[in-house]
Length: 195
Image (cartoon, rainbow, N blue to C red):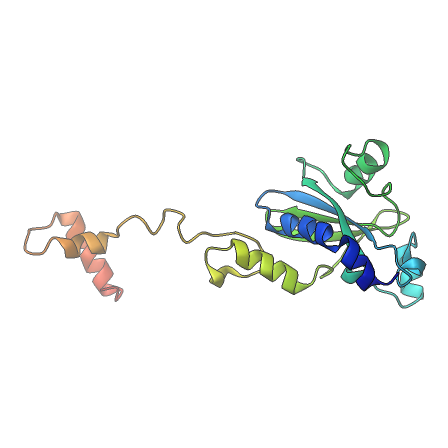
């Protein structure tokens, strides 16, 4: 079976898990495992140094999302590795976590991916393609000016813009004497060129 055929059979469930992980506004994790195809057979259960020696870089398209969950406080890849080998969740359908699996952590909106190696973990820079991250971020950001790799890190409607400015209050009451502190605020605003 090739990757396209695998995606036709398993793709929607995996894509949904990935999208839910990327769109989540809480700290979470995602377990990715190699797709069972002819193209990925030689990569299965290989440590990172073997991949490097053979000129292979882990590719996002070779992996499927098998499980996603809320990231408990102070959890790191090692704790997830132990959990998925000793006490996996009942609804977990992947194999026990092994070398060549990938753990994606989303903390404070930032996604970091780790290759499960024979001794520890290897951080994978840019493993999830930018278009996946950008699309997830655009679906959640209130201000497209905040497309920066951190999902939902600022809202236009956070309440800050709802409060009227002092300058606006001054403009609303023409002809009435203004209290001294409002007059000072108006002068400072005018000096800074805000009027």
